[in-house]
Structure formats: C-alpha cells, structure tokens
Length: 136
Image (cartoon, rainbow, N blue to C red; front, side):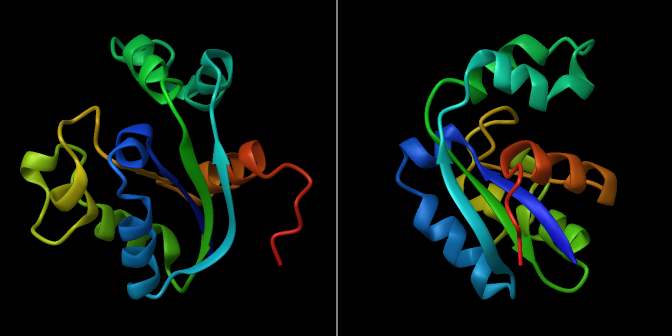
C-alpha cells in the first residue's frame, strides 16, 4: 500500500530531513519517490483546499509556502495507518514519545511532518506532487 508524506518547512530548515527519512525507513517504509519543493502560496492553497473554510487555512498555507519541503511517496503494508502512528498526534505536546512529532515538532502548526489520512487523500496527494510519475 502507498501513502504520501511531507517533511514540512520547519523540519527542513532545522536540518531534520535526514533523521525523519531515516525514521520512516527504520519503520519499514520504502521510499518510492522523493522531491524537494518550494510551494507557492497558490500551490499550498490547492493542496490544502479541503481546509479552505477553516480558521487556520491562511496561516497553514503561509507556513507551507515559507520554505523548502520534501514530498515523499512511501510504500509498506498498512502504510496510511502505520505512517499516522509513526508521526504522532498533530499537537506535539500530545504525541507519544519516539514519534516524529514528539522528536522534531515545535507546535501544533509547525509539526514537522504531514501524512495522508485516507486512501482517497493519499491518491490525491500523490497525484498532486508526482503527476505523471510512474511510482513503480
């Protein structure tokens, strides 16, 4: 099964990309595709369109377009559920010890990593960042 993840701008700026990718691989994920991106505000708005009516939409898209991020296609058994478990709670204060967010996030918004939450979102997100790419 495939899923999608983003090492967010805060984690990239802090130099934690390698450690986060290493955590993913150590948890049994195979890196299928990887790109360094610098989202425009419009690209961030398109990606997070599902949250357009939420009060945090503007600050989220500002943050996600504030610097480079790493987008990753991942594969493993039960990938979506296992990535969500490995990431930890959205608020790092609530994240279990050893999870990516407990280790690398600084706040609920600057939480180091994004991961798809359903097969439908994984399909959309993979297509958004890897259009036309054969993810063999």
